[in-house]
Length: 212
Length: 212
DNA sequence: GTTCATTACGACCAACGTAAATATC
DNA sequence: GATATTTACGTTGGTCGTAATGAAC
Image (cartoon, rainbow over the protein chains, first blue to last red):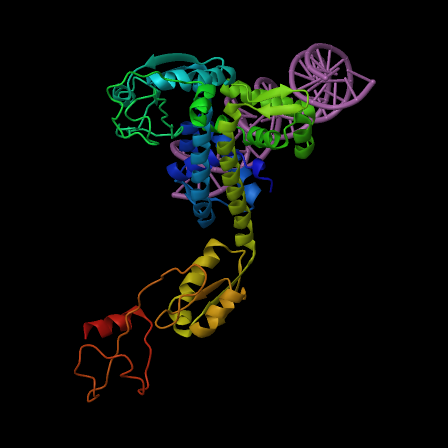
């Protein structure tokens, strides 16, 4: 049998009948008439060639065949509900508002490009962008004030939600001639704490630093 | 959205289009015309309010929204195929032949009752019953010569298929006065190996033994 | 002009509700 | 007679194919 021939509506009614033990009750629960439920079950029984319910005066009782089919039907309906949720989420994703927070460097180096791609892929999404320090972004994320936070994990604790590693950033320092640390290949942490600095964000500048 | 409103036919077409990258190709694969596929995708896009494919001259390309929905759709279709298989199996279960093997004691104590219930539940099933020792039943099951084997696990290794524990049987011994082991509460394994014995299968006899 | 996807129209099929029939207590 | 399922009939809604239309190279 082609899988698509299996009508979820029939399975839903089937499960409802099994749960309630009566065509009449299932009809009321599903917004159908008795006759519709009767025909749906008959169609399902036709489809599998087996009687699914033993008809009695006080309603119906599932046959062993029905007991066997029941968990499959429930699993399918669960999966169907999942997919329906995903589909609903799609609509919201495309039309809603995305609140992004990022620390200053990321806001210059990473966010603009990402925003451009987002704008292209989902023109309907409104973006609210907020710049702040990682230490302040994390609690905002936890509090639900942000949907996405671009943070630095140099020293910050991992936040509560899903953490996606974007990149491992290299910190390069160009030092003036005569600086006490200029002769060393690696700079100890904190060694430049008291020096003023200029940040370079474009790839050309980074490549130039690398070359040195 | 009510989950049943999600038509699996639409999702199947959706997946096919995503796989083949063209409405025309998907139509041919699914036995539809172009226009039918176009309407199905349009219906799905209506349903979720998002464009799922970027239409181009050389066919179509899935949007990010479609990429997001795709795994859900595939999972649902897989589950649907499972359920369809279960439904097909139901038909075979009800009309086919069931080959059962059982060891002698089970054949007297367990099988007749089970067979009676099976006959009541599935009148169409033909049963072939074979009695043999557990050691010979297990390989027959593995070889596909039996559908079900009722075995004893006293010493036998667990067979390859699904093992369902039916019951833990108590072994009771009624000993004649003057037997060397008659005074003990528990009989060591093998202690009666050389004695002739009579088996009691009906509950009344078991209860009588218990009482002593 | 060719190759796509979309839209319009008419036909068909499937599923419903109403209502009558049937069965079981 | 009451309760519950089944069957008959007419209607409706949805989906298809054919075919005309539109857009992109």
